[in-house]
Image 1 (tube, rainbow, N blue to C red):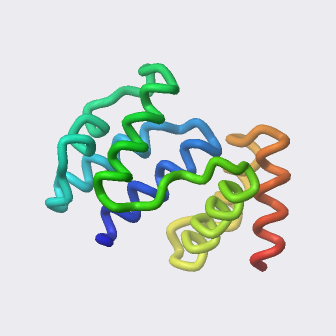
Image 2: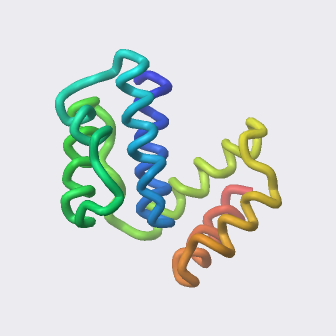
Length: 125
C-alpha cells in the first residue's frame, strides 16, 4: 500500500468521525498526483462536501475497495480506535500538536464520538 493510499483511508476515517470531507478530496487528489489513480479515486477527487452523505460514502467505499484498502469500520468503537491510532501517529510524527489534538477533539466531535476517541486514546496510551 502506498503512503498516498494510506493517507486516503486515514482521511476517510477522520471524515466519518468529524465530518470534514475536504481532507478526503485532498487525499484523493494526492493519490492521483502520486500515480495511484483509478476511476473511483478520480471521481472521489472531483466530489464535493455538498454531495449527499450517502453518495460521498459510496464514493469512498468504491475508492478504498479499488485500491485494495480495508473498508471503513461500521462499528463506532472500531472507528474511534482507528481514529485514535491515526491521531496518535500524527502527534508522534509532529504533524499534530497535543494542543491541536485537544482543539480537534473539543471543536470537531460530537460528545459521544469524543468520549469514544478519548477512551481509545487512553487505551492506546
